[in-house]
Image 1 (tube, rainbow, N blue to C red):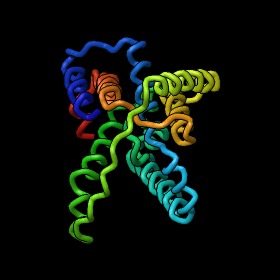
Image 2 (cartoon, rainbow, N blue to C red; image 1 turned 90 degrees about the horizontal axis):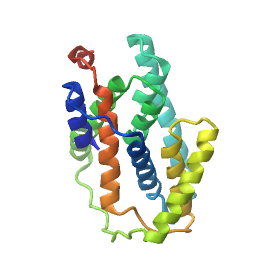
Image 3 (spheres, helix red, strand yellow; image 1 turned 180 degrees about the horizontal axis):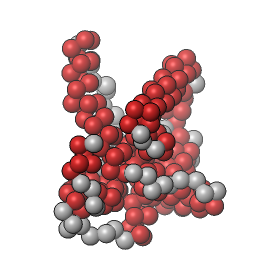
Image 4 (cartoon, rainbow, N blue to C red; image 1 turned 60 degrees about the horizontal axis):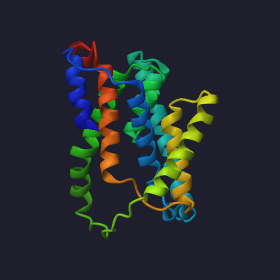
Length: 226
């Protein structure tokens, strides 16, 4: 995602990029939604019932952190409410950026803030954690079970139906969210079992990065400094 986004943003910044066809964009959204949704397994769902206190604390913390960050961006820096909320939302980078694209938010500003957060998360936080608590043992390796062709077709079909329903309800990013909800429900409930083939998953995020990077067309260096 980040590599494709960086190259697409550079080409858009220099005026050399080709615009993505709408059908290819929708294809990327479907694949990305399926890839995210298929990460939900019956084991994941079972764990939710065993840690209600931890989940409650996490939900409250996320709401407080996101709201506080958005408030700072709006009050101190004059950001619009939608831009501030999307830039402040932790995690789910691809989902946040796809929603921002669908809602015509100020994507370059949101991308810059989100990528800075991601850099801090990947480059700085691990060193802080290991310095304070030591190195944790790696989790046991689990063999990756891939979704069958029939299962993939079934999930994709239900994802398109869900996308159509969300589209009629005028919800943001209906194709992405419809595929994600359908895949999460079907894989989490055991109707299908398996993960997205890595080739398709990588392709989906590369295409999403291309699409998001196009929004850097016309961005100036002073936008980055701001």
